[in-house]
Length: 357
Image (tube, rainbow, N blue to C red):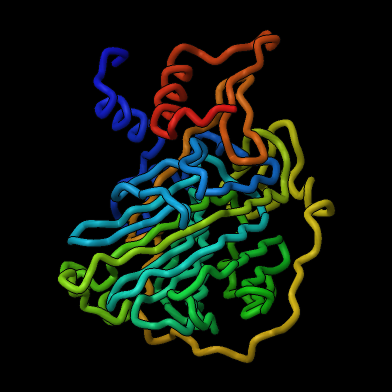
């Protein structure tokens, strides 16, 4: 393995950092059904500026994102394209702020997904045929028998300019904002019974073709397809993302199979340990009631039905900077990562353009 060519080595690392197959509502190990490895915790706040290039706390799948003055760009140009970035860390309640310009095109879907190993999920999705709205949605424990949880909320000009979208998630409510406007609030009490997302979430974002002719008719209809690739390519861009973990520690594990937030255990920290220091959610307006998606065949399970699961933890002594860069131990550290982890993160650093500081 140490003698692989760079392309092969990168593929090997990607395989180690992602163990979920291309399928909707699938998880390689569901903690509500069996004992699983713990999740890598963010345990802090990071501010990632993608106009400066890649960072090694996110891995790509489904295609190759590109980097430039617009940050990271996800382009769909042919059947099978579904480029995305996946965090190698999880948050246990928290806030995701993303500066995003959605992709145009009938059937093209730009997506921000927060998803747990037991398939709790919070979504933002922008349909390429609509420049005025964003769809917000949630799922609990992979249950997709009904599609009445989604809403279309106002997001005017979403393909023309970068807009900051926020998902603020606590044990009591989820708030979605567009710019400085709150467009939706879901309380624990108002969620469908047993469906409130409340387990450690990975963060993923990218673009895919819901209108691809290979998809089922319900998905194509929901995405307002079919997609005509001759009209492309179709690109979504993200300038930066700020992610705050409302809990602290290095790993999150499930204390039992209940799938409740009270069952989550933090190693070296505390669930909701950063909640008071996270700051208030600043908004200046509240949008009017929005259109339900009760008749739509809204897909769950990630971007285009795909997903990636992060590794079970960082090697001893490694840490993350506030810019979202994974760093090796300092020269004075007494505990160093294993040779295997040194190799993994060396390759990641190479992929990310050697952006160690």
